[in-house]
Amino acid sequence: MWKRRVITIPIVIFLGLLVTLTAPIWILVFGILSTFRPIQGILRAGLFLWCFLWCEILGIIGALYIWLRYLVDRDTEKYRSRNLFVQGQWCVALKVVGQRLFQAHFVVTGLDALTGSDVIMIPRHSSIGDTILATVFYTFPNSKQLRHVIKKELLLDPCVDIFGNRLDNYFVDRNADDKDGEIRGIVRLLEGVRANEGVLIYPEGTRFSSTKRLKILKKLPAHLAERANRWTSLLPPRLGGLKALLQSNQKLDLLFCAHVGFEGSSGFRSLMNGGWHGRVIRIHFWRVSVSDIPKTEPGIEDFILDSWDRMQTQVERLTKLSR
Image 1 (cartoon, rainbow, N blue to C red):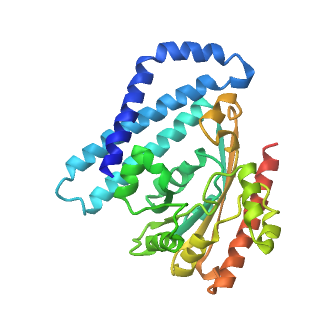
Image 2: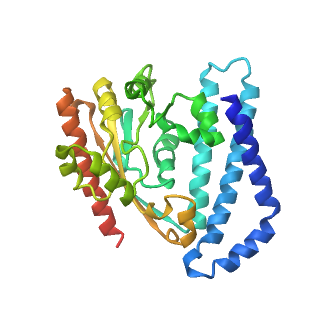
Image 3: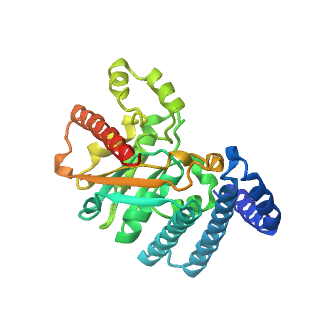
């Protein structure tokens, strides 16, 4: 862990300072380049990257302060809550910056689903942008915490690495040979769940793209491929981790999150074409009571597939509203 951070933290700080010191030059160059239609969003993308790097640097400084402040009492609730606060502020800051730079507008429905008992949150995953939704709309405003299932590749992000490891999360290796071991790691997130705490998992395992969808469909068993052909806007859910999580769950409701509008921000490069400028981000939440989750393994699998049918329906509905 420390060997990794000795590399990633200096790189982020160096890039932040470099981008800041050279800002007059690249802002002028990007401003000229943004007059060309194929890269008309390059200036906004550059400004967002600049802000992102400083969010990272400030997050690192905040993490260092908390580490020093609670040097001898890190097992306390205050230590955990301070880390949650900085993590929440980091996500909110990125949302505000992105919203203002790209003049995006959020329309949220199903807000009643956000109140009530604690949850396992199950969102659609189409973009780097949608990773902040759980924090911005659910955990931060309601003083909740979600234990995240996070792909190991994100350990290269210093803030995700530091706060993700200080809090109760699981970094999953999607290419691990020991699939059962990874599933056990996901299920362990349910152990010792406190009040106002739950779990977040992205069943698709990676961001949606049409290319990824076609590749996955070719590998699915015939009975699943036939069902998955309906999900034109979604990747088929990876059943192993989610199924095991629902089988072990005794008390958490499910909170589903469908959304559209982030499709133009699958990566920093895709922001440069200007496709995300002025987007309306439509989000819809719905809740399923723990008492309505089937108890048998076949029943849980059917329930997941039915839920993905509903996710596809909601995505189609939100897409029509945006036209």
